[in-house]
Length: 282
Ligand code: NI
Image (cartoon, rainbow, N blue to C red; front, side, top):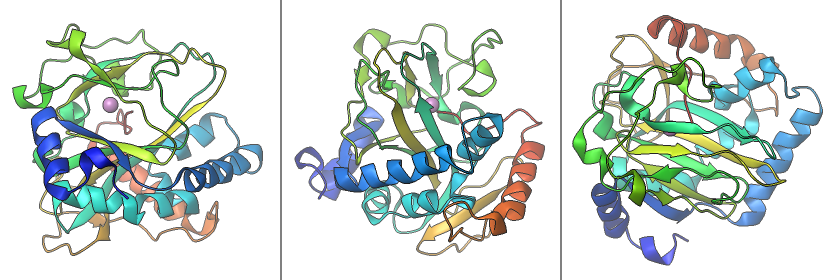
């Protein structure tokens, strides 16, 4: 049920290659997205909460600790679209749940996700952004600069003063083409795909409702971690390369304490690889 604009594999790939992104992709029905949201909010209201410890779990590979996330990163509607960019073999490298609360003014400055990710070939990775609520201009959705993925990586400057959803506060001060940036407006259950060199950012949430999205970085198995040692999880097809330490096991319970140790191990390896500073960014 991919939307009309992206009806066949050729057009999704064509759009992605030309613009550095493709959306909207209908990944699942709105009711299914609402059910995922309800499961997350039940955990927030119960054993997991909202605090800093909860944020850590939401932002670092939630698919290794929460059943809802394990299901979402493997959702056939998501993987079918991702396979049109990456081919049949797909691994999850990073994922993070991003919640912009009502009236949260935090803006994410312009950046390229791949700038600090340390992947050998950012062109063989893709970032999926799955909407669990609607995403609109008013609630601070991302804006993509069309074609910005073709100019390579652009210098990012440090900014320690910003409240950080984004890693290390690195951003691009005045990117080319910012005036023509395109807002990623999605209904619940839709998603966008973007290239790791696509320049994007987002304003704050000016509405009275939460905005919830799950961002997932998918890679083809031939991609290597620049650090030489990092973890990822095969979710479709085959890994014929063995460049990654296997994440896992996948959680089977909503908040699976049996997976806590493996989740922590993956986090330790990531932190060691990126000098204690890195977490997946929005
Ligand atoms: Ni980003």
